[in-house]
Image (cartoon, rainbow, N blue to C red; front, side):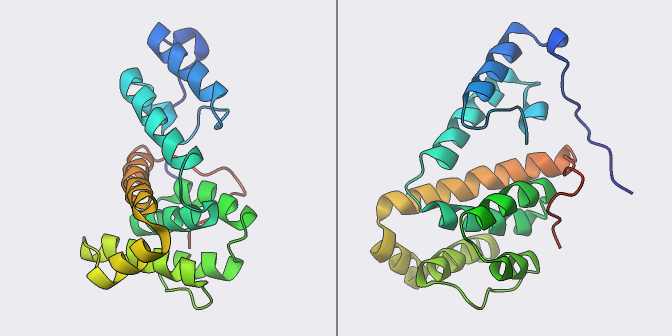
Length: 184
């Protein structure tokens, strides 16, 4: 039995002026909708606005190659068992060319077998960060040599942001749409 979401969307006629301003920004952003954690975050419109701004930089103005960013997000979603995050970003990752096999292996907490060298660097970096709460010198140096400092910062920001988003989505019990991509 599916759990009920803890926060429902606020009807338009009940939105405060601050909430309306955030909703307008969300609709005008590349997101184009109020979804994910924002139905809940609107209870604190100043926070929702700032989270949206950070998220926009991480999602839409990130120096990481998009497929690698989505792979990192999926690893974070799997770590936190964030069902909604898995659904939303699994679809994006597949559209960006991540293989179904790699998606399934990450979903089953397995190191993917057939990764590119860049995917392997990202996998090792994020895996160590989540499981060891640190990054080995070897993994850090390999990522730095390949991608540079800006990508390292964007990768760390992506990890932190999507840990936050995953926690919010889990706590508010954000449901995945019917027929959506299910976390194994």
